[in-house]
Length: 237
Length: 85
Image 1 (cartoon, each protein chain N blue to C red):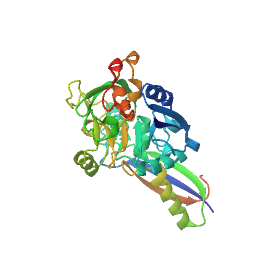
Image 2 (image 1 turned 135 degrees about the horizontal axis):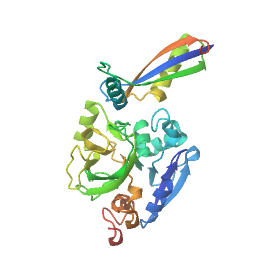
Image 3 (image 1 turned 120 degrees about the horizontal axis):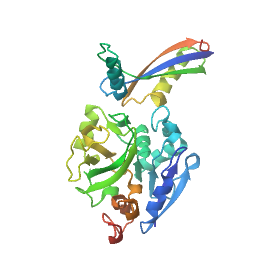
Image 4 (image 1 turned 90 degrees about the vertical axis):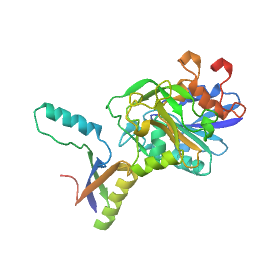
């Protein structure tokens, strides 16, 4: 069994969606851990779900980064363990310095709730094994998803292969029109240098079964099931 | 000793400020010759510290570790003795 810890902070709202989506992956079991007493010992991976932790006060993810759970998460990530952050979870990971760059207000100032396409740029993370080049369709729901970094950070993430997902049109073209929030270089998700921590603004947990309108999220989460690397079982395709 | 710090947080100059751009557009629509607008926030913190130097260290730490994200923001502060007037 692969054991996954799903962190819940005050204001997290996607933890049960993640637990449900992970329950569809054979060989994976998950627990939801409250941030004040999160102990990641014995877990193989940790997920930081979306939400509006602490009301997004100060900045999205800023207060969550000083929670005990984030300290524990840093220790867990530094030891090389797998971490995935989605939406507000991505914001928390950037605020905590576990991922490069920062997420700021969408360029158009609008909250974007939509389906987007994203191209998998790197399969050098466990989460994207076998998916390099795939164009995935996933929902987004965020007001502060514009990924930015200074010139050096952008050059580094590009040259080191740390861009994991890029917003594209349905044919995989990274056009300005396909960029929902103004992120630099259409970046939708990045990883750390160690490749064990990945964050993305879209919601893989909300597109993990056909009933929800898409199954591409399952293709990411299924990589946690050791026997499945990269492909969804036929029933979910 | 009681101190009051007024901390102003702004997006760094190289970071786009879409809120500032929207305000600039709105001010122009009022017929004003506005060339640039930057928006930020002001945070007023009342706290105890041993002396002026300790208070400055404390405010710097507040800015660095929580109130501003050095990737995208800069901050400045003024420090006064006593409670806010």
